[in-house]
Image (cartoon, rainbow, N blue to C red):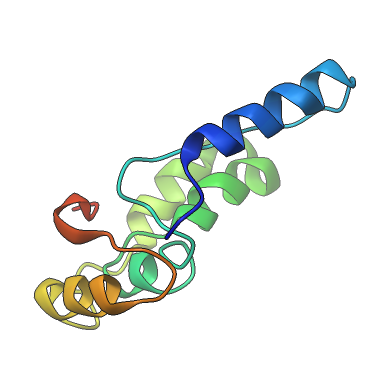
Length: 98
């Protein structure tokens, strides 16, 4: 089972209380493997969405959109099945569709 999002929220609150700068990004239907496996396979790269604006500034979103791959590497149904079978948590019907 995945660690519940409430654990991440509590941890971020403890970091805040200790004066540690942090950013919490909780997304419905996203498990531990989605940002590195399922997302990129389905043409949704969360890591690029987060890091490109930091690296490239304001024009990053337009560059990401212009250069994005439009065709998934695998059919979404296959990715959902693989995610459902993953020991790191199931995306099930909550898979992010882009």
